[in-house]
Every structure is written in structure tokens, then in C-alpha cells.
Length: 170
Image: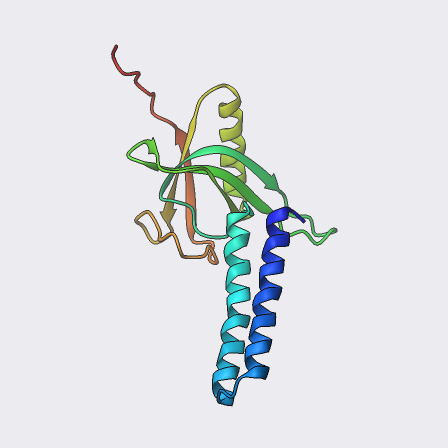
């Protein structure tokens, strides 16, 4: 465990202890005490979900509409070992062909078509050709909301070469 996770664990225990003291030492109505216990318990699960995203674990959320592919790791399915397979992408969202924030790790379900596109993308990246990905919905149109989870496989990944960057004049 890191120092931050130890601190968070200590803070969770301290909040639970304070809640216990409040529940035992006060004359508040029972429904108020039960609500306090429920709120604190739910907050632990919400915090765990939030901190998992902050600690760099790949998110199952949908990729940005347009992004720069920094790296990809492909885990092929293996029925003998019981591995479903997954595609892990390290991407930087693009806004009008300029990076819009820090890179983020995403987890996609394994699809053979996506595997072949990303293998070609990695080959070109090793040659120094930057790769850009876009997301297209199966029903047409592109883009998706950042908070939707990639539960359905109806999103199609399209990979292409990044446009040549122009250096500013001196």
C-alpha cells in the first residue's frame, strides 16, 4: 500500500469511529442514525470507484470522439485459461487536432477488427508516424458522452495517420 492509500484507510476508520460515537452518545431518532450509517457506507463505495479512476486503472468508459494513440496492449482471448481478452489503450483526447488534457488509459473488449487496426497502428508508430483514432457508432454518427460505459460493442474504432504538424514561423 502506498502512503496515500494508508491515509485514506485511516480516514475511513476515523469517520466510522466518529459515526459510532454519534450513534451511541446522542439521543437522536433511530431513523437519523440509520440514514447516517447508510450515507457513510455508500460514500465508501463511491470513493473507491472514484479513487480507482484517479490511480490510473484503465477505465471501461467510452473513448473520446477523437484521440491520439500513444500506446496499445492487446490481450487475446484464450479459452483454455478462461481469458476473455481485452484491448488496453493509452490515448490523449484531441480537440481540433490539439491535445486536450493528459493521457488516459481505456479498456475495450477484444474485437478482432480492432486488434488488426491497432497492430498496424503500432507498426506505423514505431516508424514515427503518429496515429489518430476516432469513434463511430454502429448506427452512424460519431462521438459519445464521457460518462457512458462501454458496455455494448456497437462502437467502431477507426485509426488513421495524424495530419502533419506545421511548425510556427519564427
